[in-house]
Length: 283
Ligand SMILES: Nc1ncnc2c1ncn2[C@@H]1O[C@H](COP(=O)(O)OP(=O)(O)OP(=O)(O)O)[C@@H](O)[C@H]1O
Ligand SMILES: [Mg+2]
Image (cartoon, rainbow, N blue to C red; front, side, top):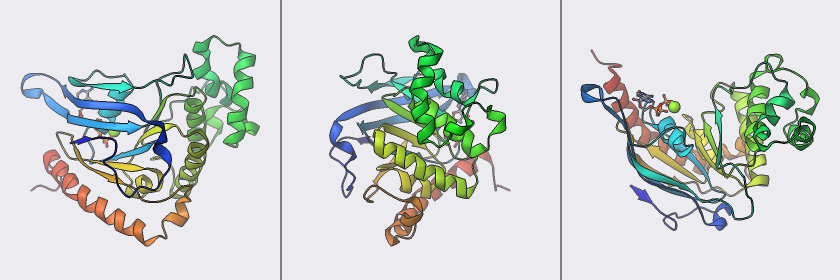
């Protein structure tokens, strides 16, 4: 399935004025060889606008992480291509930054040094890095904890540090792989609101993987539903809610329930296929 600009309908978000940002064409990825060869991803094509928020949902093992890692340049595709259009205004900006479920903070560095880590490659002094990082810590409410170590923070706080570390480098595209999956339900909603608030300010292009249908609807402009192996794009669904959004309030909207049901039906068959492939629920 190939999704191009202008194919969307019903989306009232003003996010896509900036033109094309990411072009993914005919992406395929196989692992292993001979009888052990598995096709993780097939014919994955998607064009993402500057400032657009995309969520990817799909059954476990359908290739979501593989697709994101290829976009991040951490993995080579077997076929296909990814192009990230750099901004004309800023030289030396990283093409992307990733936030993982396991936040991957350095336990031996303080909060401020963890966030400042991404700036080290720019050759700035530690003092200058700290100066640039402090406003971010303030925004995410962690300035008071600047000299704490990750082990002294809650899971939600650690994930905020992780997010700040990605944002501080001002990447062209923010790639997030189930970043809130390990959080409890209340903290997850708070983090979703916080991410939306940060996103409203920065209008970064975001690709966000989640297993939560509600999370995908709350956050994104479009939801990419993937099919079970081999992972392909099954459907791309525009999310019709205006911004700014409040996650808790959005859930009370009747259209939220309808959209959630539609996506669940689209996903259910795929999840069942994936479970059968894995032998789950089989006699
Ligand atoms: N390095 C690798 N070597 C071999 N196979 C791999 C490798 N990475 C991923 N795979 C396989 O590719 C397929 C897709 O994996 P991927 O991690 O992208 O799925 P996912 O959609 O992110 O799943 P989940 O929702 O569980 O995180 C799986 O069958 C997986 O076993
Ligand atoms: Mg994954």
